[in-house]
Image (cartoon, rainbow, N blue to C red; front, side, top):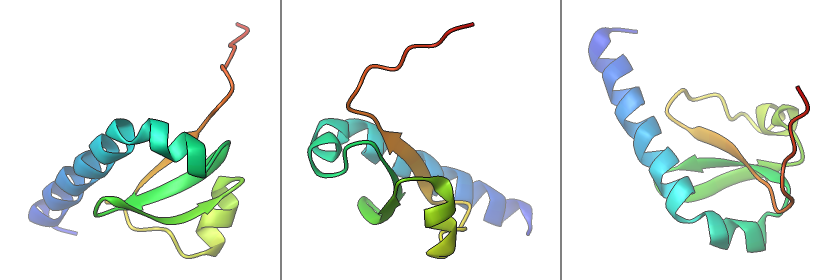
Length: 77
């Protein structure tokens, strides 16, 4: 992979993350407590864990994967 491809992947990843972030409330209604894979402003796959997405072939570095949590997350350190 050359530098142009890396930069392109990072730019697209950022756009996918921004879409995820700005549509989070809608995603909570449709995909509660699911991992979602975002590409070009749409959900292309979802599942209960990352492994499910990997089995579906979601491996492109420009695709954003995030979890849509409806419950508050509590960290115990």
